[in-house]
Amino acid sequence: MGIKWQTVLEQVHADEVAVYAASAMGQLDKTGTGGMLKARLAGNRTSAKQLPLGLNNMPADFINAYVLGSIGATGANVGACASFLYNLRAGVEDIQSGRRKIVVVGNAEAPLTPEIIEGYAAMSALATDENLCKLDNVKLPDHRRASRPFGENCGFTLGESGQYFVLMDDQLALELGANIHGAITDVFVNADGFKKSISAPGPGNYITLGKAVAAASSMFGPDAVKDRSFIQAHGSSTPQNRITETQVFDKVAQAFGIKNWPVTAVKAFLGHSLAPASADQLVSTLGVLKYGVLPGIKTLDKLADDLFDERLNIVMTDTDLTDRAEVGFLNSKGFGGNNATGIVVSPTKTESMLTKRFGNKAMEKYKTLRDKNNAAAEVYDKECMSGPMKPIYNFGESLIADDEITFDKSKISIAGFPKGVNLYPENKYKDLI
Image: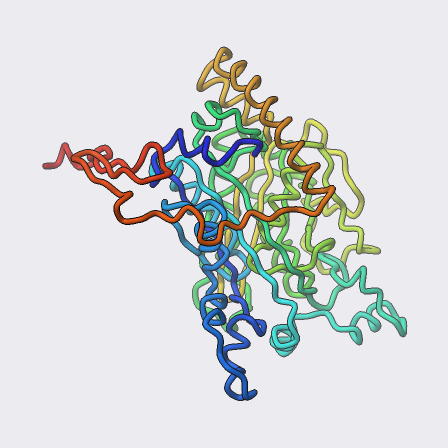
Protein backbone atom coordinates (compact mmCIF):
# COMPACT_ATOMS: atom_id res chain seq x y z
CA MET A 1 0.00 0.00 0.00
CA GLY A 2 2.91 2.33 0.64
CA ILE A 3 1.26 2.92 4.01
CA LYS A 4 2.57 1.43 7.24
CA TRP A 5 0.06 -0.89 8.87
CA GLN A 6 0.44 0.93 12.19
CA THR A 7 -0.65 4.13 10.42
CA VAL A 8 -3.84 2.37 9.36
CA LEU A 9 -4.50 1.16 12.91
CA GLU A 10 -4.23 4.72 14.22
CA GLN A 11 -7.29 5.63 12.13
CA VAL A 12 -9.64 2.78 13.04
CA HIS A 13 -10.87 0.84 16.05
CA ALA A 14 -9.20 -2.54 16.42
CA ASP A 15 -12.43 -4.39 15.62
CA GLU A 16 -13.02 -2.36 12.42
CA VAL A 17 -10.47 -4.59 10.64
CA ALA A 18 -11.26 -7.97 9.05
CA VAL A 19 -9.45 -10.70 7.14
CA TYR A 20 -11.36 -13.15 4.94
CA ALA A 21 -9.44 -15.85 3.06
CA ALA A 22 -9.52 -19.60 2.48
CA SER A 23 -8.45 -22.52 0.40
CA ALA A 24 -11.02 -24.89 -1.04
CA MET A 25 -9.08 -28.11 -0.57
CA GLY A 26 -7.11 -27.33 2.57
CA GLN A 27 -3.43 -28.25 2.65
CA LEU A 28 -3.29 -31.88 1.60
CA ASP A 29 0.45 -32.45 1.17
CA LYS A 30 2.72 -34.28 3.61
CA THR A 31 3.04 -31.28 5.94
CA GLY A 32 -0.75 -30.90 6.20
CA THR A 33 -3.78 -33.20 6.25
CA GLY A 34 -2.28 -35.62 3.71
CA GLY A 35 0.70 -36.29 5.93
CA MET A 36 -1.48 -36.63 9.03
CA LEU A 37 -3.70 -39.27 7.40
CA LYS A 38 -0.76 -41.28 6.06
CA ALA A 39 1.66 -40.96 8.96
CA ARG A 40 0.62 -43.99 11.05
CA LEU A 41 0.17 -46.22 7.98
CA ALA A 42 3.65 -45.26 6.79
CA GLY A 43 5.19 -45.87 10.21
CA ASN A 44 5.81 -42.17 10.83
CA ARG A 45 4.90 -39.88 13.69
CA THR A 46 2.03 -37.42 13.27
CA SER A 47 3.35 -33.91 13.93
CA ALA A 48 1.58 -31.22 15.91
CA LYS A 49 1.55 -28.98 12.82
CA GLN A 50 -0.12 -31.27 10.30
CA LEU A 51 -3.69 -30.91 11.54
CA PRO A 52 -3.78 -27.09 11.89
CA LEU A 53 -1.90 -26.58 8.62
CA GLY A 54 -4.53 -28.69 6.89
CA LEU A 55 -7.45 -26.45 7.87
CA ASN A 56 -8.80 -24.39 4.97
CA ASN A 57 -9.04 -21.26 7.14
CA MET A 58 -5.27 -21.05 7.52
CA PRO A 59 -4.86 -18.55 4.61
CA ALA A 60 -6.74 -16.07 6.85
CA ASP A 61 -5.44 -17.16 10.25
CA PHE A 62 -1.78 -16.95 9.31
CA ILE A 63 -2.26 -13.32 8.23
CA ASN A 64 -3.82 -12.44 11.56
CA ALA A 65 -1.29 -14.37 13.61
CA TYR A 66 1.98 -13.60 11.82
CA VAL A 67 1.56 -10.71 9.36
CA LEU A 68 -0.98 -8.11 10.53
CA GLY A 69 -1.52 -9.13 14.14
CA SER A 70 -5.17 -8.24 13.64
CA ILE A 71 -7.67 -8.74 16.45
CA GLY A 72 -10.65 -7.79 14.31
CA ALA A 73 -13.02 -10.09 12.47
CA THR A 74 -11.76 -13.15 10.59
CA GLY A 75 -13.29 -15.90 8.50
CA ALA A 76 -12.89 -18.41 5.71
CA ASN A 77 -15.78 -18.64 3.26
CA VAL A 78 -15.64 -21.68 1.00
CA GLY A 79 -17.62 -22.17 -2.21
CA ALA A 80 -15.45 -24.53 -4.25
CA CYS A 81 -14.03 -22.71 -7.29
CA ALA A 82 -16.05 -19.58 -6.45
CA SER A 83 -14.50 -19.27 -2.97
CA PHE A 84 -12.71 -15.98 -3.55
CA LEU A 85 -15.92 -14.21 -4.56
CA TYR A 86 -17.60 -15.58 -1.43
CA ASN A 87 -14.85 -13.99 0.68
CA LEU A 88 -14.98 -10.80 -1.37
CA ARG A 89 -18.72 -10.53 -0.75
CA ALA A 90 -18.14 -10.81 3.01
CA GLY A 91 -15.61 -7.99 2.88
CA VAL A 92 -17.75 -5.73 0.71
CA GLU A 93 -20.84 -6.22 2.86
CA ASP A 94 -18.84 -5.60 6.05
CA ILE A 95 -17.65 -2.24 4.75
CA GLN A 96 -21.03 -1.27 3.28
CA SER A 97 -22.71 -1.99 6.63
CA GLY A 98 -20.18 0.12 8.52
CA ARG A 99 -19.00 -2.79 10.67
CA ARG A 100 -15.46 -2.62 9.21
CA LYS A 101 -13.32 0.12 7.74
CA ILE A 102 -10.62 -2.07 6.19
CA VAL A 103 -10.72 -5.69 5.03
CA VAL A 104 -7.95 -7.88 3.63
CA VAL A 105 -9.57 -10.47 1.37
CA GLY A 106 -8.02 -13.26 -0.66
CA ASN A 107 -7.39 -16.95 -1.15
CA ALA A 108 -4.47 -19.33 -1.43
CA GLU A 109 -4.36 -22.82 -2.93
CA ALA A 110 -1.54 -25.22 -3.75
CA PRO A 111 -3.18 -28.37 -5.16
CA LEU A 112 -0.33 -29.72 -7.29
CA THR A 113 0.15 -33.01 -5.50
CA PRO A 114 -0.18 -36.44 -7.15
CA GLU A 115 -3.16 -37.39 -4.99
CA ILE A 116 -5.20 -34.29 -5.84
CA ILE A 117 -4.38 -34.61 -9.52
CA GLU A 118 -5.53 -38.24 -9.38
CA GLY A 119 -8.78 -37.13 -7.76
CA TYR A 120 -9.65 -34.63 -10.47
CA ALA A 121 -8.49 -37.07 -13.14
CA ALA A 122 -10.90 -39.68 -11.75
CA MET A 123 -13.73 -37.21 -12.37
CA SER A 124 -12.54 -36.83 -16.00
CA ALA A 125 -12.11 -33.13 -15.24
CA LEU A 126 -8.46 -32.76 -16.29
CA ALA A 127 -6.86 -32.46 -19.71
CA THR A 128 -4.60 -35.46 -20.36
CA ASP A 129 -1.63 -35.88 -22.68
CA GLU A 130 -3.53 -38.52 -24.61
CA ASN A 131 -6.57 -36.34 -25.23
CA LEU A 132 -4.50 -33.27 -26.08
CA CYS A 133 -2.67 -35.32 -28.70
CA LYS A 134 -6.00 -36.46 -30.13
CA LEU A 135 -7.25 -32.88 -30.36
CA ASP A 136 -4.17 -31.75 -32.25
CA ASN A 137 -3.54 -34.99 -34.13
CA VAL A 138 0.06 -35.10 -32.86
CA LYS A 139 2.26 -37.52 -30.91
CA LEU A 140 3.57 -35.01 -28.35
CA PRO A 141 1.20 -32.63 -26.49
CA ASP A 142 1.72 -28.87 -26.38
CA HIS A 143 1.49 -28.27 -22.65
CA ARG A 144 1.63 -24.49 -23.07
CA ARG A 145 -1.75 -24.74 -24.84
CA ALA A 146 -3.33 -27.31 -22.55
CA SER A 147 -5.90 -24.87 -21.14
CA ARG A 148 -8.22 -23.80 -23.97
CA PRO A 149 -11.31 -21.97 -22.70
CA PHE A 150 -14.07 -21.84 -25.35
CA GLY A 151 -12.02 -23.80 -27.88
CA GLU A 152 -11.85 -27.49 -28.72
CA ASN A 153 -10.74 -28.69 -25.31
CA CYS A 154 -10.68 -31.77 -23.12
CA GLY A 155 -10.47 -30.61 -19.50
CA PHE A 156 -8.82 -28.09 -17.22
CA THR A 157 -5.24 -27.74 -16.02
CA LEU A 158 -4.57 -27.34 -12.29
CA GLY A 159 -2.64 -24.28 -11.16
CA GLU A 160 -1.53 -22.74 -7.88
CA SER A 161 -2.15 -19.20 -6.70
CA GLY A 162 -2.20 -16.82 -3.76
CA GLN A 163 -3.95 -13.46 -4.21
CA TYR A 164 -4.83 -10.83 -1.62
CA PHE A 165 -6.52 -7.43 -1.88
CA VAL A 166 -7.11 -4.56 0.52
CA LEU A 167 -10.63 -3.13 0.67
CA MET A 168 -11.23 0.20 2.40
CA ASP A 169 -14.10 2.39 3.44
CA ASP A 170 -14.30 5.34 1.01
CA GLN A 171 -13.49 8.03 3.56
CA LEU A 172 -10.62 6.07 5.11
CA ALA A 173 -9.07 5.52 1.67
CA LEU A 174 -9.09 9.27 1.04
CA GLU A 175 -7.78 10.15 4.51
CA LEU A 176 -4.88 7.71 4.14
CA GLY A 177 -4.17 8.52 0.49
CA ALA A 178 -4.49 4.88 -0.54
CA ASN A 179 -3.96 4.04 -4.21
CA ILE A 180 -7.44 3.21 -5.52
CA HIS A 181 -7.28 0.54 -8.24
CA GLY A 182 -11.07 0.35 -8.61
CA ALA A 183 -14.19 -0.45 -6.63
CA ILE A 184 -16.30 -3.52 -5.90
CA THR A 185 -19.95 -2.51 -5.72
CA ASP A 186 -21.67 -5.90 -5.42
CA VAL A 187 -21.04 -9.64 -5.38
CA PHE A 188 -23.95 -12.00 -6.04
CA VAL A 189 -24.01 -15.65 -4.93
CA ASN A 190 -26.55 -18.33 -5.87
CA ALA A 191 -26.71 -22.11 -5.74
CA ASP A 192 -27.87 -24.47 -8.49
CA GLY A 193 -30.58 -26.39 -6.62
CA PHE A 194 -31.16 -30.07 -7.39
CA LYS A 195 -28.34 -31.70 -9.35
CA LYS A 196 -27.76 -34.89 -11.30
CA SER A 197 -24.03 -34.75 -10.48
CA ILE A 198 -21.90 -32.60 -8.21
CA SER A 199 -20.23 -30.94 -11.21
CA ALA A 200 -23.33 -30.46 -13.38
CA PRO A 201 -24.39 -26.88 -14.22
CA GLY A 202 -27.66 -25.33 -13.09
CA PRO A 203 -29.64 -22.08 -12.85
CA GLY A 204 -27.46 -20.38 -10.22
CA ASN A 205 -25.08 -18.78 -12.72
CA TYR A 206 -27.97 -17.23 -14.67
CA ILE A 207 -29.11 -15.56 -11.46
CA THR A 208 -25.70 -14.26 -10.35
CA LEU A 209 -24.77 -12.77 -13.73
CA GLY A 210 -28.26 -11.45 -14.39
CA LYS A 211 -28.40 -9.66 -11.04
CA ALA A 212 -24.88 -8.28 -11.52
CA VAL A 213 -25.64 -6.85 -14.97
CA ALA A 214 -28.95 -5.44 -13.72
CA ALA A 215 -27.22 -3.79 -10.76
CA ALA A 216 -24.51 -2.26 -12.96
CA SER A 217 -27.12 -1.06 -15.45
CA SER A 218 -29.10 0.54 -12.65
CA MET A 219 -26.02 2.28 -11.20
CA PHE A 220 -24.27 3.46 -14.35
CA GLY A 221 -26.98 3.32 -17.00
CA PRO A 222 -27.72 0.75 -19.72
CA ASP A 223 -25.12 2.21 -22.10
CA ALA A 224 -22.29 1.54 -19.63
CA VAL A 225 -23.15 -2.16 -19.69
CA LYS A 226 -23.81 -2.30 -23.43
CA ASP A 227 -20.75 -0.34 -24.57
CA ARG A 228 -18.21 -0.23 -21.72
CA SER A 229 -18.27 -3.59 -19.94
CA PHE A 230 -16.55 -6.95 -20.35
CA ILE A 231 -16.59 -10.41 -18.79
CA GLN A 232 -13.83 -12.35 -17.07
CA ALA A 233 -15.27 -15.82 -17.69
CA HIS A 234 -14.85 -18.84 -15.47
CA GLY A 235 -13.55 -20.50 -18.65
CA SER A 236 -12.48 -23.80 -17.08
CA SER A 237 -11.54 -25.41 -20.42
CA THR A 238 -14.00 -28.29 -20.23
CA PRO A 239 -16.33 -29.18 -23.12
CA GLN A 240 -19.41 -28.89 -20.92
CA ASN A 241 -18.47 -25.52 -19.42
CA ARG A 242 -17.76 -23.89 -22.77
CA ILE A 243 -21.35 -24.62 -23.83
CA THR A 244 -23.19 -23.86 -20.60
CA GLU A 245 -21.24 -20.72 -19.72
CA THR A 246 -21.61 -19.12 -23.15
CA GLN A 247 -25.31 -19.97 -23.04
CA VAL A 248 -25.58 -17.98 -19.78
CA PHE A 249 -23.66 -15.04 -21.26
CA ASP A 250 -25.66 -15.00 -24.46
CA LYS A 251 -29.05 -15.12 -22.71
CA VAL A 252 -28.06 -12.30 -20.36
CA ALA A 253 -26.72 -10.27 -23.29
CA GLN A 254 -29.99 -10.73 -25.13
CA ALA A 255 -32.00 -9.65 -22.08
CA PHE A 256 -30.01 -6.41 -21.71
CA GLY A 257 -29.58 -5.60 -25.39
CA ILE A 258 -25.83 -6.24 -25.39
CA LYS A 259 -24.09 -7.00 -28.68
CA ASN A 260 -20.48 -8.07 -29.23
CA TRP A 261 -19.81 -8.40 -25.47
CA PRO A 262 -16.03 -8.77 -24.86
CA VAL A 263 -15.15 -12.01 -23.05
CA THR A 264 -11.81 -13.42 -21.90
CA ALA A 265 -10.63 -16.20 -19.58
CA VAL A 266 -7.46 -15.89 -17.52
CA LYS A 267 -7.24 -19.67 -16.97
CA ALA A 268 -5.74 -19.89 -20.47
CA PHE A 269 -2.58 -18.38 -18.93
CA LEU A 270 -2.70 -19.63 -15.35
CA GLY A 271 -4.66 -22.86 -15.28
CA HIS A 272 -7.34 -23.47 -12.65
CA SER A 273 -6.17 -22.49 -9.18
CA LEU A 274 -9.47 -23.60 -7.54
CA ALA A 275 -10.35 -21.27 -4.62
CA PRO A 276 -8.32 -18.26 -5.89
CA ALA A 277 -9.52 -18.66 -9.51
CA SER A 278 -11.76 -15.59 -9.36
CA ALA A 279 -9.00 -13.72 -7.50
CA ASP A 280 -6.82 -14.38 -10.55
CA GLN A 281 -9.67 -12.86 -12.58
CA LEU A 282 -9.72 -9.77 -10.37
CA VAL A 283 -5.97 -9.17 -10.68
CA SER A 284 -6.28 -9.38 -14.45
CA THR A 285 -9.37 -7.16 -14.44
CA LEU A 286 -7.63 -4.39 -12.50
CA GLY A 287 -4.98 -4.41 -15.21
CA VAL A 288 -7.62 -4.25 -17.95
CA LEU A 289 -9.32 -1.30 -16.26
CA LYS A 290 -6.02 0.53 -15.84
CA TYR A 291 -4.43 -0.07 -19.24
CA GLY A 292 -7.47 -0.63 -21.47
CA VAL A 293 -6.22 -3.91 -22.94
CA LEU A 294 -8.23 -7.13 -22.66
CA PRO A 295 -5.89 -10.17 -22.86
CA GLY A 296 -6.82 -12.58 -25.65
CA ILE A 297 -7.17 -16.33 -25.15
CA LYS A 298 -3.98 -17.10 -27.06
CA THR A 299 -4.09 -20.86 -26.56
CA LEU A 300 -6.84 -21.15 -29.19
CA ASP A 301 -6.56 -21.71 -32.93
CA LYS A 302 -10.29 -21.11 -33.24
CA LEU A 303 -13.44 -21.06 -31.15
CA ALA A 304 -15.42 -24.27 -30.72
CA ASP A 305 -18.41 -24.75 -33.03
CA ASP A 306 -20.91 -25.51 -30.25
CA LEU A 307 -20.74 -22.17 -28.39
CA PHE A 308 -23.68 -19.84 -27.82
CA ASP A 309 -21.76 -16.75 -28.90
CA GLU A 310 -24.08 -14.80 -31.17
CA ARG A 311 -23.81 -11.72 -28.93
CA LEU A 312 -20.33 -12.39 -27.56
CA ASN A 313 -16.86 -11.32 -28.63
CA ILE A 314 -14.63 -14.02 -27.16
CA VAL A 315 -11.23 -12.45 -27.79
CA MET A 316 -8.34 -14.57 -29.08
CA THR A 317 -5.90 -11.66 -29.38
CA ASP A 318 -5.18 -8.72 -27.07
CA THR A 319 -8.02 -6.27 -27.65
CA ASP A 320 -7.97 -2.49 -27.21
CA LEU A 321 -10.75 -1.39 -24.84
CA THR A 322 -9.51 2.16 -24.33
CA ASP A 323 -12.49 4.24 -23.14
CA ARG A 324 -14.55 1.03 -23.27
CA ALA A 325 -13.42 -0.59 -20.01
CA GLU A 326 -15.54 0.87 -17.23
CA VAL A 327 -17.16 -2.21 -15.69
CA GLY A 328 -15.82 -5.76 -15.42
CA PHE A 329 -17.89 -8.80 -14.44
CA LEU A 330 -16.09 -11.65 -12.65
CA ASN A 331 -17.99 -14.88 -13.29
CA SER A 332 -17.30 -18.07 -11.36
CA LYS A 333 -18.82 -21.55 -11.16
CA GLY A 334 -17.88 -24.27 -8.71
CA PHE A 335 -18.47 -27.94 -7.98
CA GLY A 336 -21.55 -28.52 -5.87
CA GLY A 337 -23.51 -25.68 -7.46
CA ASN A 338 -21.54 -22.70 -6.13
CA ASN A 339 -21.94 -19.66 -8.40
CA ALA A 340 -20.88 -16.04 -7.99
CA THR A 341 -20.52 -12.88 -10.04
CA GLY A 342 -18.77 -9.71 -8.88
CA ILE A 343 -18.89 -6.16 -10.29
CA VAL A 344 -15.58 -4.29 -10.64
CA VAL A 345 -15.59 -0.58 -11.47
CA SER A 346 -12.67 1.24 -13.12
CA PRO A 347 -10.46 3.58 -11.08
CA THR A 348 -11.49 6.51 -13.31
CA LYS A 349 -15.19 5.92 -12.66
CA THR A 350 -14.51 5.31 -8.97
CA GLU A 351 -12.63 8.61 -8.67
CA SER A 352 -15.54 10.39 -10.37
CA MET A 353 -17.96 8.88 -7.86
CA LEU A 354 -15.75 9.88 -4.92
CA THR A 355 -15.47 13.43 -6.24
CA LYS A 356 -19.27 13.72 -6.31
CA ARG A 357 -19.44 12.43 -2.75
CA PHE A 358 -16.57 14.32 -1.10
CA GLY A 359 -15.89 17.30 -3.38
CA ASN A 360 -12.91 18.59 -5.37
CA LYS A 361 -11.03 20.00 -2.38
CA ALA A 362 -10.97 16.64 -0.57
CA MET A 363 -9.87 14.88 -3.77
CA GLU A 364 -6.96 17.27 -4.34
CA LYS A 365 -5.74 16.64 -0.80
CA TYR A 366 -6.16 12.91 -1.38
CA LYS A 367 -4.11 12.95 -4.60
CA THR A 368 -1.19 14.64 -2.84
CA LEU A 369 -1.16 11.92 -0.19
CA ARG A 370 -1.63 9.19 -2.80
CA ASP A 371 1.39 10.29 -4.82
CA LYS A 372 3.55 10.15 -1.69
CA ASN A 373 2.30 6.66 -0.81
CA ASN A 374 2.77 5.41 -4.38
CA ALA A 375 6.40 6.53 -4.26
CA ALA A 376 6.88 4.59 -1.00
CA ALA A 377 5.18 1.52 -2.49
CA GLU A 378 7.45 1.68 -5.54
CA VAL A 379 10.56 1.75 -3.33
CA TYR A 380 9.30 -1.31 -1.41
CA ASP A 381 8.46 -3.12 -4.66
CA LYS A 382 11.97 -2.52 -6.02
CA GLU A 383 13.48 -3.87 -2.79
CA CYS A 384 11.38 -7.02 -3.09
CA MET A 385 12.18 -7.50 -6.78
CA SER A 386 15.91 -7.05 -6.30
CA GLY A 387 15.87 -9.75 -3.61
CA PRO A 388 16.21 -11.49 -1.39
CA MET A 389 12.69 -10.54 -0.36
CA LYS A 390 12.21 -10.44 3.40
CA PRO A 391 8.86 -11.99 4.26
CA ILE A 392 6.77 -10.43 7.00
CA TYR A 393 6.56 -13.15 9.65
CA ASN A 394 6.02 -11.92 13.19
CA PHE A 395 6.12 -15.28 14.96
CA GLY A 396 5.70 -14.80 18.72
CA GLU A 397 6.32 -11.05 18.50
CA SER A 398 4.38 -8.20 20.15
CA LEU A 399 2.25 -10.60 22.18
CA ILE A 400 -0.49 -8.98 24.25
CA ALA A 401 -0.42 -9.84 27.95
CA ASP A 402 -3.59 -9.94 30.03
CA ASP A 403 -2.53 -6.88 32.03
CA GLU A 404 -2.25 -4.90 28.77
CA ILE A 405 -6.01 -5.17 28.26
CA THR A 406 -8.10 -2.71 30.25
CA PHE A 407 -11.80 -1.83 30.32
CA ASP A 408 -13.70 1.34 31.00
CA LYS A 409 -17.38 2.12 30.43
CA SER A 410 -16.98 2.99 26.76
CA LYS A 411 -14.10 0.96 25.35
CA ILE A 412 -11.49 -1.76 25.67
CA SER A 413 -7.91 -0.46 25.59
CA ILE A 414 -5.35 -2.88 24.14
CA ALA A 415 -1.60 -2.40 23.82
CA GLY A 416 -0.57 -1.71 20.22
CA PHE A 417 -4.03 -0.58 19.11
CA PRO A 418 -4.31 3.19 19.61
CA LYS A 419 -8.11 3.46 19.28
CA GLY A 420 -8.91 0.20 21.08
CA VAL A 421 -12.37 -1.36 20.75
CA ASN A 422 -15.54 0.70 21.00
CA LEU A 423 -17.97 -1.05 23.35
CA TYR A 424 -20.98 1.05 22.37
CA PRO A 425 -21.50 1.32 18.62
CA GLU A 426 -24.70 2.91 17.34
CA ASN A 427 -27.80 1.21 18.73
CA LYS A 428 -29.76 0.08 15.66
CA TYR A 429 -32.77 -0.84 17.79
CA LYS A 430 -33.14 2.35 19.86
CA ASP A 431 -36.40 3.29 18.15
CA LEU A 432 -37.90 -0.11 18.94
CA ILE A 433 -37.23 -0.23 22.66
